Length: 200
Image 1 (cartoon, one colour):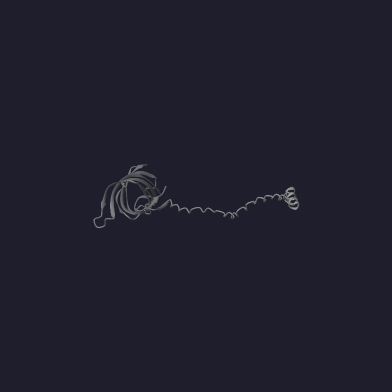
Image 2: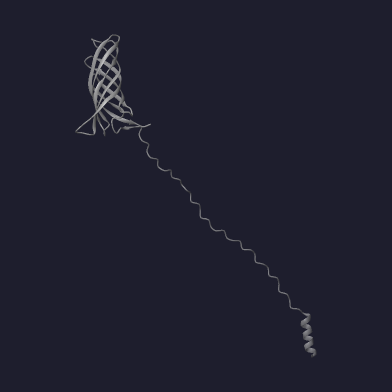
């Protein structure tokens, strides 16, 4: 081997290649937070409540509370209440008599004895009733101006349409006065009432 080649080989053996500088790791990339859409306010809408039924409304037929007029002797206001059992009712009247110039108040219990049906009109029936009650009368009549309390025994017949809240009636009521003296009277008249259903 020539001295020149040996010297070059020796030189390469003595000087190793320089080391590459260390590579610094790249800084971690923080993830970009996803954009959150702004919250939409939620408005709760309360459901519309159904209108509550009126506590008093017209009945479908003569039942419940009836209010009307009584014409005859005497004449005035008439009120009745028919129970769920159509055979039973209570009736009251506040009336006055022009001829005898007195005012009377009566209250009766009524019992339907029989209910007749119309042959020609099947939507109307005719209850036949009898009752018992009390009557108080007071006035300034020249014939009987003292207050009087007595018993009534009314009996009559009514007209009941099955699909209308109306009642017509004709009634006769013998009266026996008990206080202050014993007397006998007879009330007679006819009337009409309109019935209202009462909701609890």
